Image 1 (cartoon, rainbow, N blue to C red):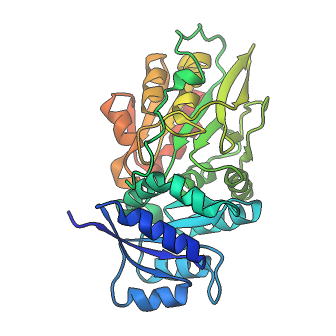
Image 2: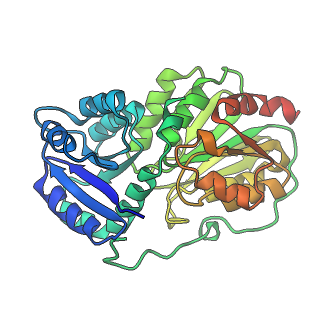
Length: 358
């Protein structure tokens, strides 16, 4: 197979130089050009169009958001946003994801060179996943160091048989990654005010989840917020796990609450969908609905199987409507999903979850 052609558009010479060298070490990737701003990038793209663009959002002459919107209008191409890990950068990145970016890489303001060197393997994986992204669904290893150990949900929540679930309060758990910001906007935006309480893991760095939740809260009829430790899970409310921390469902009598935990990454993710789904299996059992949507990797597949084994109804998004058919595919392989639904059919299933469990 031909290597993925990558263009890096960033006004930082450090990013262009270091990231080019890292990606060049991966035979599956080929950096065909770098550019310090979108206007120069367009000149280069006229000669050789990339398969994936790594794009900064704050640049001279033309900002990354304007460039991205123009690109998606004229010739949709997978774009990975490289954004500063700040509150301001997070708000801008939400605009980029809404405009059609596939994924986001968060870069620090300080220690940038070392961060890039430490993150080369993850960046290469994100770019390869972006190259396989289904852009149509959006609209309707540089081995410098050994990979971090792959941990299971056991490091956060022991795998113990779930206790008998009392009552009939319903709760919905949703897990997603690459392409998930657009998918969640669609699902949550289609829900009526009266719907079951929802807990969500979207793979996203710190700061970004808060901005994402605020954006959704403005667009949706239901309340959407970044989860805080002790928050109640209530009908008409969706809680999004904060970036960099795990979200665990807890039950106290007839009420559900969330616990936010600082624990090691699971499946190299924090928050992890497996952790969330295991907690739903333990605390809600048959009164839960688990939904796994677009994303790379297999985080959530085991947890969804645990939910199904505990009596919950489980759903995987179908391949045709996924941006990246990774996490749902692994769930289907494990026979974890009772139903396979297109994105357009998931809101109705979520809204009906409360009625199904009464």
